[in-house]
Length: 290
Image 1 (cartoon, helix red, strand yellow):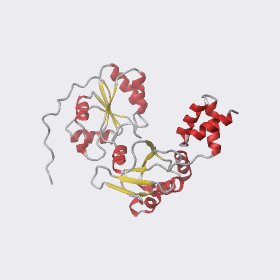
Image 2 (cartoon, one colour):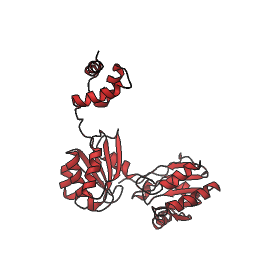
Image 3 (cartoon, rainbow, N blue to C red):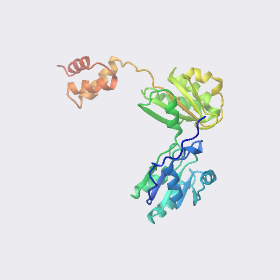
Image 4 (cartoon, rainbow, N blue to C red):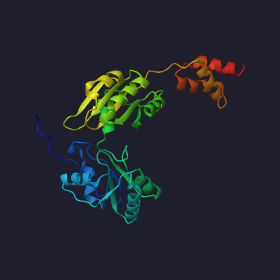
């Protein structure tokens, strides 16, 4: 096993941290995933807003840092926003962190960031660890078009309804899920989305990191996906293209012709429905009575 790389002498020195609100990503498991810039900001922060101050206190202690901490969870977000705006107007450095990963990705903090933006105050991202991106990287599924859907509803009926809305899309889907609900969620996904390829990523960057790949029905039946422990991300590949019917094409053309000439209407519908342009152009002329 090779030794960790020595600290590169060419790494630029830290820059002064200017006043503003900093949205700071923190490790999702492995403490060595903390970025140098995140450490600079937290060391300079006059105030750190944290989802759970106890969790953040342990994180800061691990890096030898101390800071004034204030809670910023779903119940305290409004108060935290007022405090942050007050301090930012005084020229302070305010950092916002969640318990793990990137703030506001299914985590509290939106109220604070929106308030700062509305006041015209500087808001800066400090990128870093993200379970969403980590899972997407190792899933082995297309990542050129992605829809992050967060947590699905806990009850099957509402969950299937939400999945039905996502079914027509042609992008890779990413979900967060808890261990006790994983098998039921996978079963509902298989029922609504069909046998799409998927991956279940668990405990990313941690000791028991695991990524299980297969079709949705296979994953729903896999013993490894029956109430596992840890943080879970589900990545589902895009569905196959559905061939539009003649009625669908006529409806789309009729609407497009209210705004565009036949050639442009045919081109728009061709791109939207994945149908050949020339037959659509001829049909557009027919619909116009030419």
